[in-house]
Length: 101
Image (cartoon, rainbow, N blue to C red; front, side, top):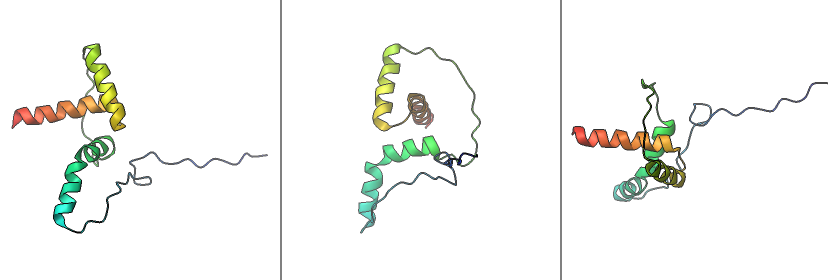
């Protein structure tokens, strides 16, 4: 007798199972701008984690970081609901962009 197969759900961030951001209905453009400004960290985190539409070439590296910095990154990442390596990659990306401009 065959067991009924459990339906597998597609991973989040795919076309089949997209990540949805629940934005409220805005009455003015200023209200919408304020909401996006207040939620920019959440939006950035979601884009980093799920938003890449085209593959970005990456390269694995090994770095030695102070344990204290890693623990701090883990704490911040937990509060944001993302992985600590994703957070570090995001911080590095932002810092490089800032220095380059």
